[in-house]
Length: 311
Image (cartoon, rainbow, N blue to C red; front, side, top):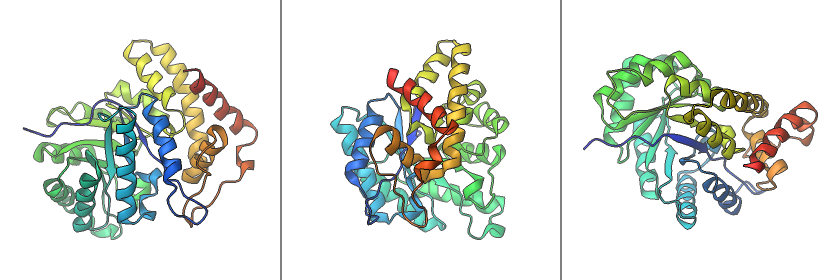
């Protein structure tokens, strides 16, 4: 029996929290995951880009995944999906991360293409990398396409379709590239066995992705206002496109503010507007000053926070 794809819905790529000495702040993590668990999201992505995966030891990655699984179970959400970021530069380490993710409680692995030796990463090399990882991984994988963090390497729709068609353990993709044409092609490619979960990778084009046929969104801003994301999906599914578009407008404006503030800024926003986390990242990422939230940016984010509080 072929592995199942992740269910349709909203997935929050959970941020990492740290104390002043840069050790993991597990209590802040529990607070955050509790809030997400109560919001109606379909699942969590642990150690995505917003989870500062490159800054964590293998043992820390395992600790965060295990904590997420524990909190979901405590709040009666054991069915919520955990997708673990398992990208590394070698095939060997990537498979090791997939294995450790499974042991810690993850259901799926989200895998970036290797990119350190960019010139060597030609299409056949990348295809073999993903095929080897998927075959050896104890859990199904999702392809993670994010050219901004892979030295410009951009998986095209044919490569995604070929991998999904040839390896049943390739069950989805996250397209943070923002290419809606690619998302549409992947969502409707008859070569790809179904179900296959093609996710939009940013809140900025969440609604547009749904129209194109996506399975939902894995988006940083879902850390900030998860209920707003769930509401937008409900409006779209109910055929209320006008209301969904109005909500997408608010979400796009707020997402642009958060994108400009970066990973550290997202955590600073959680601390400023929801009162937890401390806003710290591991160096060389630093704290985002409160002045960055003044004026129009503050107004845009407050508007979304008020909406989140009303849901």
